[in-house]
Amino acid sequence: MKKVNTIFDTDPGIDDAFAISFLHNSKVFDVKMVSSVAGNVGLEHTTRNLRGLVKAMDWDVPVYKGLSKPLIGEQILAEKFHGVNGLLGYEFKDDQLAPLEKESAIEAMIKVLEENEKTLIITVGPLTNIASLLTIREDLKEKISEINIMGGAIGMGNVTATSEFNIFADPEAADIVFSSGVKINMLGLNVTTQTSYDINMHKEFKKSELRINQILADIMDRRIKRAGAEENYTTHMHDTLAVMYATNPEIFESKMLHIDIETNGKYTRGMTIADTRLNSTCEKNINVVTSIDKDKFKKIFMENLL
Image (cartoon, rainbow, N blue to C red; front, side, top):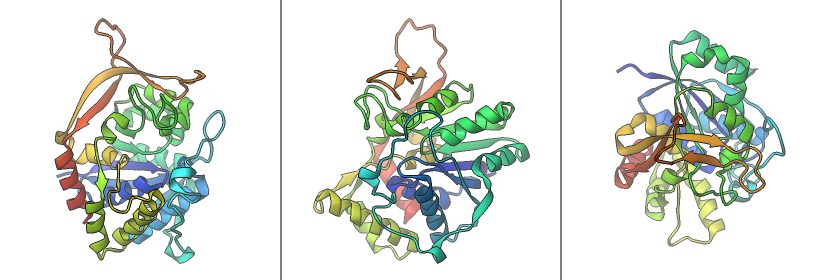
């Protein structure tokens, strides 16, 4: 089976760390590069975390630094959930970091797209890097097979009443990407909150002798302690779904909808507005993933990572 040329863009981040490990372990991808972007925390932290995670897996993949601020407007971070450094204080030492390439993430993405026939982009943070790529080199859209996005929501939010964090952190970037004409698979809160990582799964991680799993378990120990839910903790593995949609599409259901990104609303900035009217004449531009087989998710997730 021919592997899928892949670019992975991320802002690690607790659940990003699990997604990176899942990506690394999957046999589907030929990962050409991984890149950081500011999002859950500032760029220096997300870049350092990405380098540490890559090194912990002994993964020979080039790491690039992306953009440090949203295209427009105030920067929004998620330090209250992920901690100041993104991994709740878990720190990689200097000798535990993978090399950082000199070129920028955007330059590297351009090179990957130029040199390959078709490339999948998986993005699990704000869309700043991807929007910049599409703005600078719009002619390369045809080289992107599709973009799997962890972001957005329909009828719900997690940073405001209407907006999901990755979109809210850079709505202008999201607007560029969603209106680009590239095939987009949106894995938003409606589907990601159907997944769970519970205390029993965590106990299995703590038994693993793999260094990356020991790191993931340490980070989750910190999260569980902070939540004060040692006996019944559960959380969602949002970002892993953007990877799993490429490895196991058969466990998901989706539908095409017209989606617009709100960039100006006082209460709705960052909202992914879905046109669900039966008589709508708007072009259905986004493949919105709506559901997942929860049991199969757990099985695939644990088998891949352990």
